[in-house]
Length: 587
Ligand code: SER
Image 1 (cartoon, protein in one colour):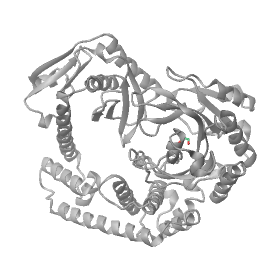
Image 2 (tube, protein in one colour; image 1 turned 90 degrees about the vertical axis):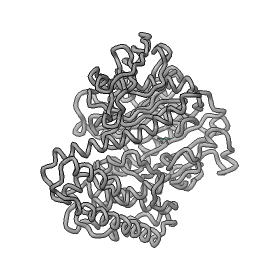
Image 3 (cartoon, protein in one colour; image 1 turned 120 degrees about the vertical axis):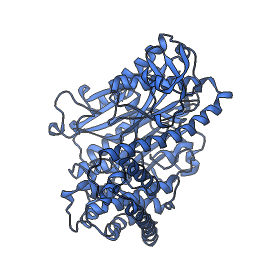
Image 4 (tube, protein in one colour; image 1 turned 135 degrees about the horizontal axis):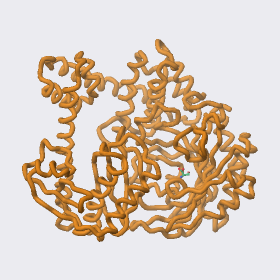
């Protein structure tokens, strides 16, 4: 089944069942708290919350849409089988079940009808997950019994917690609810043998296809949940994923959405020889086409920066496949999508991308000129510093610069470069500590508590994941703490639980937090965590929590860990390559 046919089928299936087709909203949302549209329900938030009248606006409480989405968080992972920056999401909605809509039963009925009868997925290959409940929200036993009655056997139904089976809100507050997902079993040959099932993170046997969200809660500022005035259904299917499955491909890059684009780039190097570069270029150009169509221009901030980044990244990877221009792949992308999105303006796209390319080439030339002026005979220290400057000013990765000036013995230079890098981080961190210092006067209790919890989290992560964990950034507001750290992989659920338990144990033990002034070297000798030694002053403040944690830090902190209450990790996700991000709270 080709991509257009699948879109038509989905659209007609729900239109036939009384759903109103709502056109995709722009990638730039009205909601200013989010940068880009990343889910189909975003344009419906005021209707899902009951704030606006859906019937008045769309003439129906049943809606269907195919929404343009963009997610930039996993940019470095593009190139594998499943990640995309831009993608499309299918969805159907029932907004206000207690008026005349449908809820769980109706959502499940139509989902199975579409999958099994409309597009022919065998029922016995479908697995489902349901919400097992937590301290705030009860288990979703209603969905469980609906699936059983629909012929999904017990062993194909599994229960998960809020990380997998609770959806939303998209911002920090708003409509959300338990969800039930349909997964597809691709067969044992994709599996990791022992006991794997939906959400297995070790193999590709199960693909998550459809997320049915039963939105009946609102998450409030203080983290509590209250019932919405109405119950809603919000569903979402990753179109690319479903298409790949229907075309029996491991990846959407190998379906009719991308293959013509990829073929048009095979000049000297074939796709098989460097799949990653071909995929990155195809993905990024498609993303750029849609961002430009929605009015974004390359720039230094926000969406503009994302657009600049993907265009420049595509240019860098173009070298790897010996391609001179984007003309052919862009033509193919525009041809493929113009039918569905007639607003795509070819001239505007070519002009913006060409201009950005010129400005990038100019930066490259200037950077290369600077590089050529660097004497290869300078000390490693000096070279490291200069290459860091080039990296900062022109965005040249170290490897590229070293290659350009033809240096092969790179160990000491790398060290010097990294030292400079850390020094720079320290400077920007000092800036944020000053900001934090400013908070001290009117410091709210919660923020001080989060600050101490951050130290406990840092040490707990090192205990569980190893000493390579280093703080890369941190941020605190009144609702949560955010902590970025170096680590190459997604944490497992067990690791997350272990970290939570260690932090909570230290809280339960009621340990005094001790502040001491000491000489920097002494602090390091005592094993205090401090990362940016080059610019620390001679005398530093060290905060210790018993023997558990010791960190060089400006404070402020609570005086005893028992003041923290209970610690909970809300989210663990990728922040950038090799850097993970945790959001956590105290309650
Ligand atoms: N909002 C849910 C999701 O994005 C279902 O559409 O998965």
